[in-house]
Length: 136
Image (cartoon, rainbow, N blue to C red; front, side, top):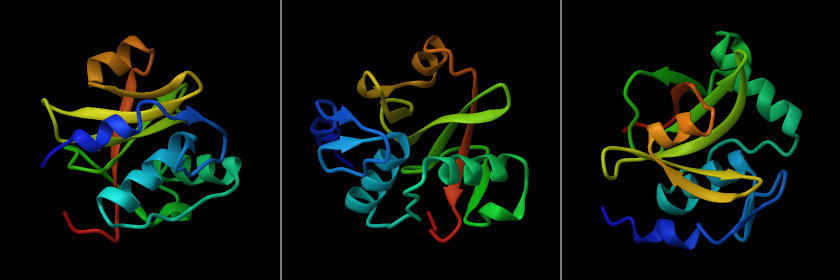
C-alpha cells in the first residue's frame, strides 16, 4: 500500500470537534482517515465529553463502548489510544508503514510518529483498539 496520501494531512490544522477535510481534532482525524482511506465509517461523536467517555468505557470494560475491542497487535487503521493517569487523553490511527506509525492531530498540528516518538511526547500508556464491526 502506498502512503503518499498521508502527506495531505500534515499541513492541516487542529480544531476541537472537527472531522475534516481541512481541520481535525484527534478523533476527527481517525474518523476521516478510516472513512476516506479504509472505506469504513466509524461512529461519530459531536460531543467531546461523550467521545472521551466511550474510549474510557472500553478501557474500563464497560458496556458503553461495545463498538471497540482492545487488540495486542495493531493492524492498519486501528485506533491508538494514549492515556495519562489512566484516562484516555489522545487518539490516533495506526499505519502499517516503516515498522508502524501513528497519524494523529494535536493542537500543534497533524503528525505521523512511531511509538518512540509518541513516548517522547509524554504518551507512555498506549493501547490499540479495533472497531468491532470491521474484519481485518
